[in-house]
Length: 168
Image 1 (spheres, rainbow, N blue to C red):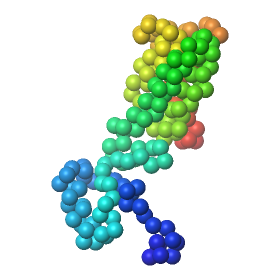
Image 2 (cartoon, rainbow, N blue to C red):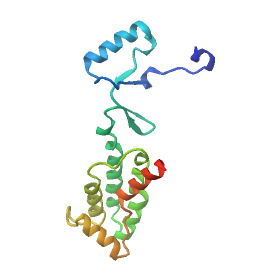
Image 3 (spheres, rainbow, N blue to C red):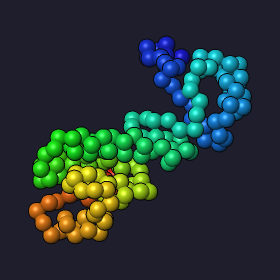
Image 4 (cartoon, rainbow, N blue to C red):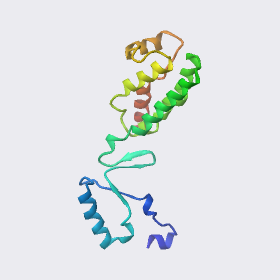
C-alpha cells in the first residue's frame, strides 16, 4: 500500500533483517525465510543477520564486535599515507590531527572508544614521528605533547568529547 501511494519501493539487495532475539544461525535464518515465503514473499531475499551498518554505524546485538573495525582501518590507512609522504614531524603531526584523528569522530558520537584505543594511538604517534614501534610509551607521548611545540590531538579524548557532545 505504501509503495503504491508513495512511489517508493524496497530493494531487497539493500534490505537487512536484524535478528535481536536469536542468533542468525543457518537453522534460524531458514525458519525465518520459510515464514517470509508464506507471509511476506517480497522480503524473501532480504539479508538476515545479527548486525548491519546503517549510516556508518553498526547496529544490532552483535554490533560491538565490529563497530570500530572500519574506522580504525581507515585511521591506520590515513596514518600510513601521512608516513609515506616523508614530511618532517611538524607537518606530519598537523596532517595527523587534520586527516587521521577526525576519522574516528563520526562513530564516536554513539559508540565508546575501542578497547585498545591507547595502543592504536601510540602506534600511530610512533609511526608519524618515525620512531621504532614501541619506542615511546603513552605517558612519554603525553609528556612530549606538553613539553614541546609538537602537539598531537589526543585520539581518546577526541572520541570521548564527541560522545559527550552527542549525549548532551
